[in-house]
Length: 261
Ligand SMILES: [Fe+2]
Ligand SMILES: [Fe+2]
Image 1 (cartoon, protein in one colour):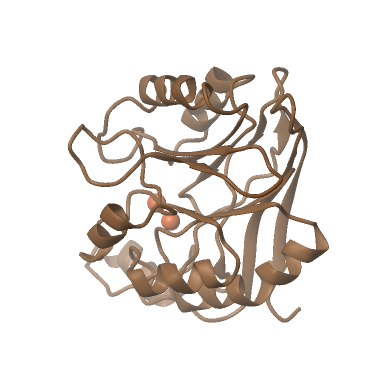
Image 2 (cartoon, rainbow, N blue to C red):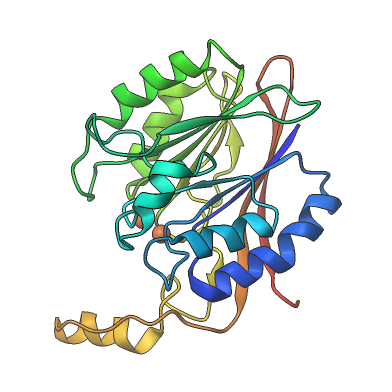
C-alpha cells in the first residue's frame, strides 16, 4: 500500500493546497491512504470543525495534531466526536480524544495511525517513548501496518523514537518544525523515517507566518501579531510504500509540490 503523509497544514493557503493538490496526488501515486497534520489549519493556530471538514473533503483520511491542539476551543467537538481525528497520545489519562486510530477500508489491511508529541524544548507531557511503545504493542495485536506522526522539536528526540520503534512500525515521520529535512531513509528493521515532513502552506514566510512581525519580535523582544503569509504555497510531506504482509517499508519519497506550479 501507499500512504501520503502531509506536514502541518497552515491556514487557508495550506487548506487550499490540500483541496487542489491531494486529489491529483492520490491518482498520480495510486495512494491508498492520506494522513495530514492539521494543528495549524485554522488561521495558523489550531483546528476547527469547519477546517477539518475542508481537509477531509480534499481527500485526507485521518488528521493528526500537536502542541497547537488547544488553540481553538471547538477542538473539543473534534476530540469527542470525530473518529478521523487523532491528538498526541501522551496526555495524562482523562483528556478527551484518542492518541491513535485503526483505519479500515475495502481491500486493505487495517492501518494503525499514531500521534505522539516530544518533550524536548516543548511543553511537558508523559514520556513519548514509554507511551508509544505500549500503544504500538497494543495496535500490533490488530495490524502490522502502523504509521507514527511524531510531533517534536528536537531532531535527536525524533531519531531516538524512530530507532526505538524500528521494526515495530512501518514509518515514523516528524512534524512541528515546519522545515523539511533531507534524511529520508529506511532503518535496518524496516521502518521508514524522516525527521520532519515540512509544512503545507505559504513558503514566502517564516515557517508559514508573515516575515516582518516575526523579525520584529526577534529584533525587539516585543509581542507581535503573526498573520499567516500568502505567497509561494507548497504541499510538503512524504509518500511511503509499505508491504501489506510484513508491514515493513519498501520506500520513502519526500514530497514538495508547488500550488499552481
Ligand atoms: Fe507544533
Ligand atoms: Fe505546526
